[in-house]
Image (cartoon, rainbow, N blue to C red):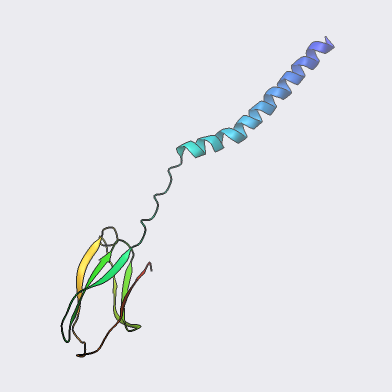
Length: 117
């Protein structure tokens, strides 16, 4: 009789151990299957190109794919600073910016910066 009782006790201990392992591992397994992965942020892209120029004006093409704020610098100083509001932060922007405060016979250097404030 002792042997049967001892075997039953070992079987119950083994079942409890298996149940504990199952309880610890199964939720982790479910979590990896059921959790939706967050979408990756689109890669921010900004491009500023010179489209046309006159003696006192410059037409600049600004192309932005995502972000929340655009800063355009002329000769290292902020020339324009404007936020991108919805739905623009979700879609591409392609627009012309005109700088009409230039001096004749002078060279200017422009830079566009995209920030995610």
